[in-house]
Amino acid sequence: MMLATASSCRVAAARLLPGLILAALFLLTGFRLPAADAANLPVATAARVAGDETRTRFVADLTVPVGYTVYVMANPYRVMIDLPQVSFSLPEGAGDNTRGLVKQYRFGPVDEGHSRIVIDTDGPVLIDKAFLLKPKKDGQPAHIVVDIVRTTKQAFDAKLAAEGDSGTAEAAPEDTPPASASAPANPRDRKLVVIDPGHGGIDPGAIGMGKTREKDVVLAFGLKLKKALEAGGTIDVVMTRSDDTFLTLRDRVKVARDKEADLFIAIHADTVRGGDARGATIYTLSEKASDAEAEALAHKENRADIIAGIDLEAENQEVTDILIDLAQRESKTHSLVFAKKAVAEMSPVTAFTGKPMRSAGFMVLKAADVPSVLIELGFLSSKQDESQLTSPEWQQKVAGAMGRAVEKYFATQLAARTP
Image (spheres, rainbow, N blue to C red):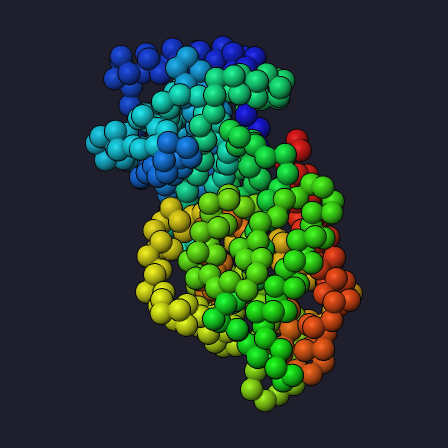
């Protein structure tokens, strides 16, 4: 996805001028679509705005997926969403129900073949992300999602000028959201990964056959992973804990959100009663567990906060909100991409379970805008796994492999942004 440049904005304005004149004529002459045509058009049924004065999300619901173009313009500052011909069935006054960076939004036909949504902003903004999500089920709407971030006039002008005459951002109806449309207002030169060693403090986690404590081995591994990631010089790392400290699940998620992490990796080790289970497993978020074992593990991990007297069993309100759900749907896609790369890189250096990738409703993976995975490094109930988990050599080897997976994951994102 790419933003319009300063010059291409002018070109776009010139190109669109005839359409604007036609639109004015349509309004003046009382133009209406023929009834037969209107009945066959996609319908915009709702729109909503969420966020704050730093980052704001605009969502439009349509009866069917459509392609669209999104770009920014100045004098006044606004975001333009150009659509094929659609019918608008939004409540009266919908464009006045705004917040954050959005002052108001307007919508209507441009000419017989095109429609437009104009989002007036309270200053210069850039498009951070723009994507379209198909309906999950029949009868549900498709969603056009546009995330905008505040910037300065200087950064706005510089960003547009730097991109040359590359055109506007175009999106086709896809199940997989594309990479960010442009860099945020305050772009980082380096990616940020949050590493979350599980448990800690009064919560030892699983206990191995040789009395190995989960909290100790996952911290040791996390520190080695941090070192491996930082060695390349392109990735910054934040640890949720760097010592034997207890953090609630909510606090761990908050670190990822507050730091605006590009990837969140929770590290754990498991135990089972009886059997000979061993090997690693990588989990991604799903409200419906992939199997009974995944569901049981998620239930156990989600109740870890009760050790400190905090029961978060009922704190799932945020994931029921439609805007959070949309963000999670995008993040889940990226989480799966990373999980696949991690399995590919780690398989040559460590064993995986029979189902190397699973999903479950882990509370710690519910940072809506952050791609997140939880890795169970192995089973402390297995003598072989416990021996590996406590081996500095094994930890170093597996941390290096995971580090390569992270680098390849970010490289794929950069490639997706290249026109």
